[in-house]
Length: 504
Image (cartoon, rainbow, N blue to C red; front, side, top):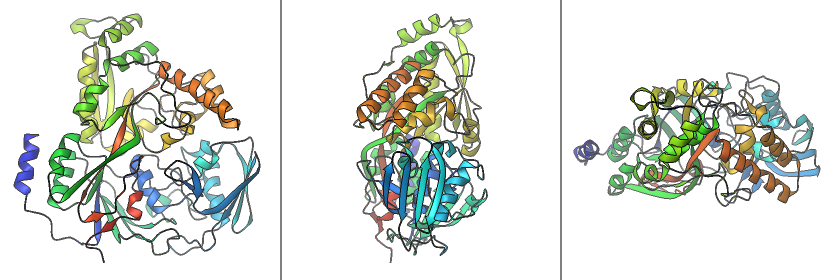
């Protein structure tokens, strides 16, 4: 912290003046893994994709659906969904959007044209028809309450007909911004899309600069060589930055959830008492107050509080080292030489915040006899390992996707092992599968809620992953950027309407 303060003092008065005043510089922790909206599921890919692409529908501030590329839709029966597209919409390269593009986008995931972890989200679809250039009809095998969610802008984006596996190299969408260039591990550049149907952004150009080091991020903002960072700065730097007359720190309650995941194929972690013990060994309140500066709330479900399907009435494994030790003894892992019960390995990215958090876990688990070995990799390598299940433990965040109960199926259903979904830890519970299938098929809201309440209780007991905390949305920005409204998911869509004081 002293070094951080010293550097800020040294650099005060040296604000950047030699850069394009019409370009907003946005700091991100890592390169997006894949800017094809059919494929990318990491946070950076999804956030940037929302600026480049549109789904058929979108969600408002209350998580209700409203029109996007579809001007309207109807459901004449539980297994038929009809969308009427907006006329006159064009892709950023000038091609008109038609029903053929929608059919191609969905079918290219379903038939393996692109290998997509999102493909299983459309398993209920029997066939898709385009009876007219602006009409798309989905025929379902069975009712699917989550199809609208999986066709929304936060979940996917419509791509042009014929887009193949190399589409990520130069993605073309209908969003408020268009893709200009990408240099892996350096930057992504977007520009205002003059053909956007929805809004004409005030900002002409955005450069997403990849800065994996948190202290460097802070210094770039202080120097004035960067404009915005969202949820990526160390919390202990926020009070310092807030004192800078050129910088604004905005904070709002968020739905982004930090979690700790386990590989249940591992001979140690397959024991539920071991996972429960790890939960009891982690002092979440202390981490929230120290590392996060109080900018978070403890989480006991993937769903955010206030959601219609949320329940907090679940088994709790709060900080209790004595209970952790008891559970580990019961699981058959007594202390050995040096008090160590066993070793585990946690993989992390090279992001500073992630590494610091892992180091805290390492210290806290050591107190109950678990030796946690840490392995850090560049994000692309780290994420590739996670997706293919090459890990014992890791920690990431769910961003936006946990605002709908379909997250339970995507992450924990037996049918959603990669590459068909996000069940990376290979958790399987027949009762949970039954509950989630029933909730997806019924239109009875009371029955659906009952299913999800029981599902949350099962997951809170089995702990295939530990829900740690809901992170506040914290946007730190230069005062030349105005009209910023933080969203609960920490998305970048505030850029659609934000302004640069010097833009012209």
